[in-house]
Length: 288
Image (cartoon, rainbow, N blue to C red; front, side):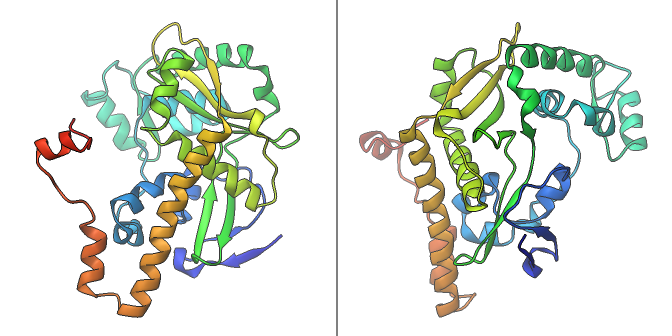
């Protein structure tokens, strides 16, 4: 098992090219490498990604999708992570007092944990293979050319079959509705990145057993699955590889020109050029 000390990542040390169980969400994100969500920082600018530690402060905060996610995948950790407010609202004095007394826990409205644990029972009944899956396991791989720690934390992975699924709490109520939001939300990028990091770590994946397990946010919360096509996975791969190449090109130019080269910095920070509504409409640029 290869292990290196990545001093550039706050001295965090993790075993590489292996599946790590039991790493907390906080520990995973504090590793400081390139996760699927951090590609959005590179999209904004390489400099934003370089200084990601300024934006990456982890703190417990409530998100209904995260609660749904945790109740399905790691119900054994719910009591360690969440605490219910005695009130339905989260802006009450009682909820605020509870938050102050439990700074390391996420405060949720009364009845929500029970609600999502019930949904979890339904999902596990409909999708029985979940009980065989490794859930929220972490993978780290060192990209030598980019000098970056690549990290992935797939929701559902069954090594024996190469099964890889991402769990999504979604407004979509059907496969057709979900298909329309995959690309705008970059779900294709995330899945391709998970797939490739696992492969780089020496773990197999199977395209026929890869995609998304979707839990509609609206009742009756009927779960459904969507498989990814080779074409869509390749599109997601091209998205993240383009951003990774942008990062590598910038770092190479920075070494040649210097870290404070004005033209280089402007070319990165001001990539986006504004146009008039008429121009955007004429040239099929987003006019929303």
